[in-house]
Image 1 (tube, rainbow, N blue to C red):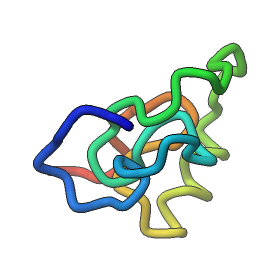
Image 2: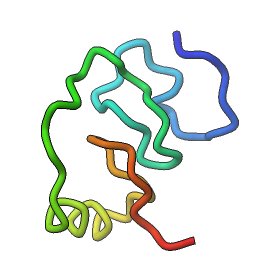
Image 3: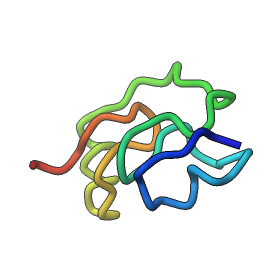
Length: 65
């Protein structure tokens, strides 16, 4: 199980989350998923349309503060 966090996203509670980074806070939730792929502006735009705050692949913050 992952260490406690203040984020409410349920992926933090999963031992085998389907994504590398949390879409709400950007923290790593599954280190076993490779982060070798490069993100593009188009990919980040698509994730923004899905209303993600952070990229699930690289953890970069997508929304403007």
